[in-house]
Image (cartoon, rainbow, N blue to C red; front, side, top):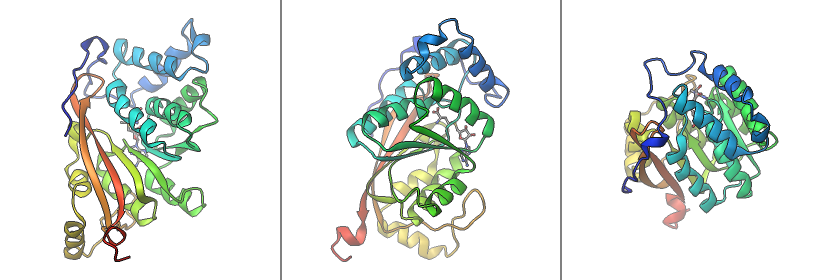
Length: 276
Ligand SMILES: C[S@@+](CC[C@H](N)C(=O)[O-])C[C@H]1O[C@@H](n2cnc3c(N)ncnc32)[C@H](O)[C@@H]1O
């Protein structure tokens, strides 16, 4: 576990309200940015568009973006691991897609696929991604993540994932990871970064990625039923995959402590133990 950095209160987002999304603020964000007198200066600049989104989150209304601190952790990982195939689950208004899409493009990735279930959020995200000059590289795919993962795989568009960023519906992290395992998308070297593992937390997901192969096999043997996915279709993962996992502590954009769980797949147990 990492030592937490220090949060700079000057850059804190507005506090999270009882209702903090899907109340019109996403369209308001887009309108606010498009009406800025300096909007021309944002064209083609991921950094400036992110600055404009952060400015709205600080001065106008809270936005459930990954934010600068946790975003910096993931950006560094992308630079270090240089993924070719990168998938994000949960795009919201495109903050992380712009930040990580820019980093992935610089690191030589093929494209950045962002799976988002809400069509209105996806429309806002696309406009901001286009404004940042990333429209040809960052693709938003609308629909529930599990459907989109299956469809991309069936169409031959997705045969492996090098970098997976999980930031959608918290109970779906584990079944969606297991779906990716089942589809053979998680391989030796795949990096999985999961947001919000402290706030609000995700004990089933953390227990799984921190388990060894024997414990996972025992759990599978004692539960003959599939874990299920958010769309109700049965899914079983691959307990034979060996993971190395670490919590990196950081902050929500409001300053509340949170963390990213970074998990690296080392390959299958059979391959590592020489029995494959
Ligand atoms: C926390 S927000 C994502 C924030 C974004 N990653 C960022 O940092 O800029 C979560 C998003 O996941 C989306 N979502 C929830 N369940 C989903 C699912 N099953 N498939 C795809 N997107 C989903 C929500 O509509 C919402 O936009």
